[in-house]
Amino acid sequence: MSEKPVRVAIVGLGFGAEFIPIYQRHPGAEMAAICQRTESVLNEVGDKFAVVKRYTSYDELLADPDIDAVHINTPIPNHAEQSIAALEAGKHVACTVPMATSVEDCRRIVELVREKGLHYMMMETVVYAREFLFMRDLYQRGELGKLQFLKASHQQDMDGWPGYWPGLPPMHYATHCVGPVLGLGRHQAEYVSCFPSGTIREEMHGCYGSPFAVETCHIRFKDSDLSAQVYRSLFDVARQYRESFEVYGSKKAVEWPLVEHEPLVVHTGKRPEPEIPERVECPDFGHLLPDEIAGFTRGGVYGGDEGGEHLSFTQGAGHGGSHPHLVHQFVELLHGRGEGYPNAVQSANITCTGILAHESALKGGELIRLPEFTLQ
Image 1: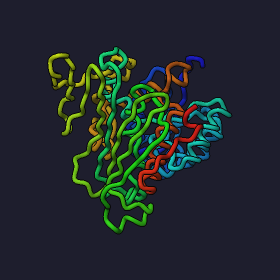
Image 2: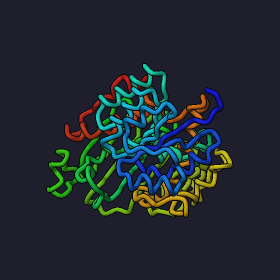
Image 3: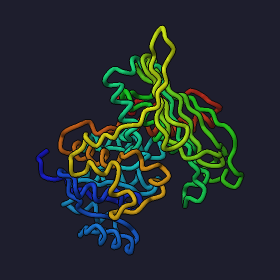
Image 4: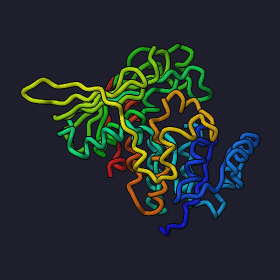
C-alpha cells in the first residue's frame, strides 16, 4: 500500500473517543470521520476534536468512498453485524473486543476477510499493555527460558452497567485473559474445558440462561505441550478490578500484583540456589511508537484536556497504555507492515475460546475443540 495516509472512521464515541486524537497525530493516518447515533453526542465530540465529517447513519458512512477503514467501538451485540457490513462494503476493520458472540459470526468475518482481501484486527488492549509488552520482551530475548505454564484472570464488578451486561456469561467476554495467554508465544487454542463456580443473583439468571458467578477454563495449545488457565467473573464476586497475566518459565517467572498499581514480581531461578523474587516497576514502551503518539501511553487522551474518561478505561487502570500501540499496529498493517496481532483468524481463535468455554461450563466441563477455521 502507498504511504498515503489511511483514512479511518471511528464508530461509537463513548470509549471510541479516546482514539480520535491518536489517529489525528499518527503520521500514517487521517481521522476522516466519526459516527454516532445520538446527534448531540456526535456534534459535541466532533466540535471538541474538530472532525468535519460526521455520520449518524452507519450505512451512509460505509457508502462513503473516502473511508478506507472503520474502527468499531460500539456495544458488544453490534460488533459482528457491523464488522460484517463493513467488510462487505470493502472497508478494513478494527473492532474492540470481542470479535462476536457466536462461532458462526466469527466464521463469517474470517471468510469475508479472505474473500475481499481485506484486513481485520481485534483491538485487544491487554496484548499491548506495558505489562504484557514487558513479558513478551523477556520471552523474545530468551530470559524466561522454556514456557511451562500461563495463567490469566479478568475480574470486574459490572453492577450498574447498562443494557446487555446484567447476567452476561463470564466467558463471553474473556478476551482480556485469553488474549495474553495465547498472544505471548502467538499460540492457538486447540480445545478447552471450563467449570462454573457459584451463582449470581437469581434475577439475572434468565438474561442469558447462565447463573454462574465465576468460570474457570483450561486451554490446551495446538502443537505445544503448553496449557493455560484463565478465570473470569462479572457479578457478585468481591474483588477489586483486576486484569492479570502470569508467566512461568524455566528461567524466570513473572507474576501480576494482587493489588492495582503495585509492581510486578519477577522470580529468577538460580540453581542450586533458591528462586529469588524481585519487585519490578514495569517500563513504558512508548519508544516502539512514532514520536507523535508516544506520549499517549501515559497521558493526553486519558482524562486530560483532550478526552473524557470512559468507565471501561478508568476501571481498567488506563488499559496499560495500549491505545496508541493498537492504533499504530492497525495503521502499519494497512500500510503493508507488521503483523497486526490479532488478525481475523487469531481473533476468532481468542473469541471462540471464550464462547466455547461457556458451552463447556454448561456441559459440566466437557472438552470442546476449537473449529478448524480458527486454527488456519
